[in-house]
Length: 371
Ligand code: SF4
Image (cartoon, rainbow, N blue to C red; front, side, top):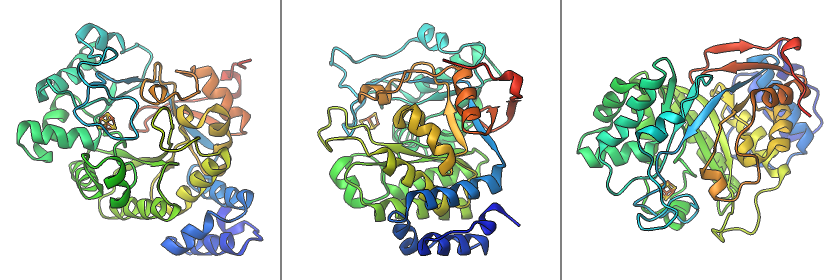
């Protein structure tokens, strides 16, 4: 028996999804799109039961830092408030000392992403990982999106296998999931026509998985995409995981309108919770769906624990990308606050590293209440 199969549901669309999942069948595009209109709490109960069948009451997080070595970027994606031209007064490029200062002794993961610098060579990006590893050799390094990997291929005139091998030699452990945006040619033409599309993003992650390099994956939602395009995106990721397993987590990223002018306001908390729940049910072969508090805000991220999310990402330290787009969440969250948020949701906090190795499972006495 499982939590999913025991669930009593009233809504026919959610009940149909429950029956399919209980039989071990993946949801179709049509049934998945219909779930977006289902009653929210029914949807949440099913997604929560689905996550519980996989992880029990455990909810994961990591004590980590985000390192964004430069915001100089040769591209200019319409939705991006982070990237700057080289001559912009707010453009920055970190040196060795600044990069090493990001490696706090207590962290178990570093997440490195940034712009496609007009002057940097591949060696400069390799140096970033080398410097991090010099400070903390056992630190798990999650670095460079598929967009950056493709950029390195063009810089070096080598293929992705060669580039990933060089990165692994200096200490790369996993790839982050960014740069996927929405796997829709229509949206790509409109918002990020210079950047790689679905085919190349999926190809790079498939190569990484086949080399034994795990990764995450994302969806940027809440701008000009349709719900059908969100579902199509999830199904393409599900198909990749089926043929070349290696994803740890799927992270729905709520678009931060910032100063882009693309939409007037961020998706509502209701839409965020629906997207997390539908993602959990459609992308049935990914281990975790993350509730990324930086973009959702702490309250919605905490509520998402009951809508299928089984990971809260990390403490992060100083986050630059979403905050360049005026995200209202704090720039970092303390370990105690993470533990408290998960406990308050009635779950068991588990601290992990970038590869989901368990660092610590918290007992009741470990929970320091944060006011
Ligand atoms: S989204 Fe990435 S590739 Fe596009 S402009 Fe911003 S930093 Fe550059």
